[in-house]
Image (cartoon, rainbow, N blue to C red; front, side):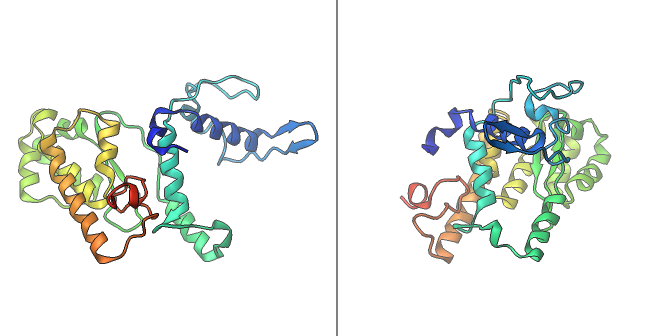
Length: 250
């Protein structure tokens, strides 16, 4: 599959969209017939931007669309998180009713949000909770005295004195030391999120903001390696998506 070059290829998302359309609208080819399933899960009009369509466009069965360019590497990493747990492949077919219900409840906790400005996603403090998107520009638009409550209401986290002072004093995004707090706090919740931030917002964060998070991540990875024997073919604990033998196991 050449995972090292997956982020430069863009075919997987279009193929998934075709599959979703076939499930929703049905398909026929010779003797093969796939009946229409409809329902909201694969409804192409529910989230039109996923197909690159504007809000007012209703989907047509035989229409030609220009889907967004989603790197194959992104699709690969998403599937890997769904199919591999602690280095072992998950068999959804073997799940009991109770286990399926637990998975469903977790998925129901997530929601779709449209970022209105420079934002970062903060993983919920509660286990299996949905992450929260924090708009940094909206934060700075709040009165200085109300920023602490604004952050706590959205991120569900208590602020330290250092972060509280930085949030109150910040007058522009580049001066907001709370950006560093958001990066570090997110990194503590998920070991691979710093690389995601750098990919989504290249150049938005200075090295002085990202270095503490990177160092924390490396410490967490080394702790995991020391606590248990990581198999060479297991996914690396750092969250890079690579096998351990091709990452920290080299």
